[in-house]
Length: 345
Image (tube, rainbow, N blue to C red; front, top):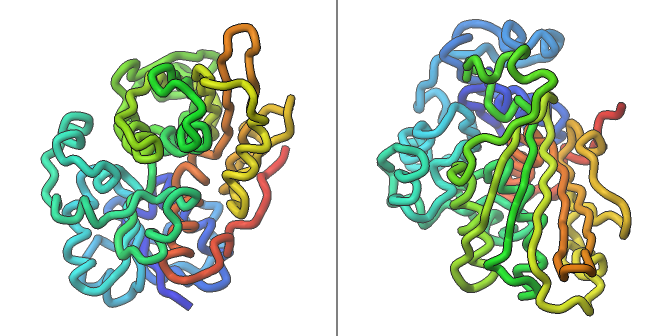
């Protein structure tokens, strides 16, 4: 049984980690930190947890966190992981950063997109980008893992087989994603995120400059063996959670059976479900789960391929994938504690 600590447990990602870990047979939550709810049970923030046996929340203290935990998740926000990771690693702990501090290998790119000077650049080369379907062997040996962004996860999984097999013109890639409102986090109180502003509306945002663009390009470039630049546009949809991504690219050859290609590429990757030809993903079908559903279609009129993917932004896009990474880091079976299907209806 490993001891797990969650830093900033009262945010959406932190609470979702708690939900997954409560059902994990080889992990026990032994440390919870929350500045807002210090000294209180987490159920004061989430009454759905009122019956669960959990430690009280407390202010973050690296010595206490390290003493009580074997592995720690950081879910507070950008700019925090770089401050606390070095001390925890020095104490021999494993660390999963849910936000973006260790996703990008280039500190200048991080500064450009996040407006923060990186203070732990010595860890950037060591941190493993945590998409298990692409980097499982490295994750299994890692002491620090950068959990991917939610949009990036859906986009990378949608495009990875085509890019890796050199089947598309990489200069033609366009990615269009729609996300539920929980992606903004619980503490980010802005007029644009309140119910009356979001309900019955549908809009694009961060056009031509979203923070997940560089990690999408970084990972696709690794697969392609050359620099890739994508066009990415996110949209806000009036639903709580879920991301539907549609990716477009020009096919270099239309001879391949792309469904077979995707199924071969993701063989043994239990959390990626390649749907049969003609079937399209729906965010409801992955709600509350760590699964990614992928649909594939060719447009014979113009030689384009259209790939759709659906994930839960709180599951495969955050906490579920973090637990999947933890399983690999700790030598557990990759699906442990994550096999439950989506909540439906």
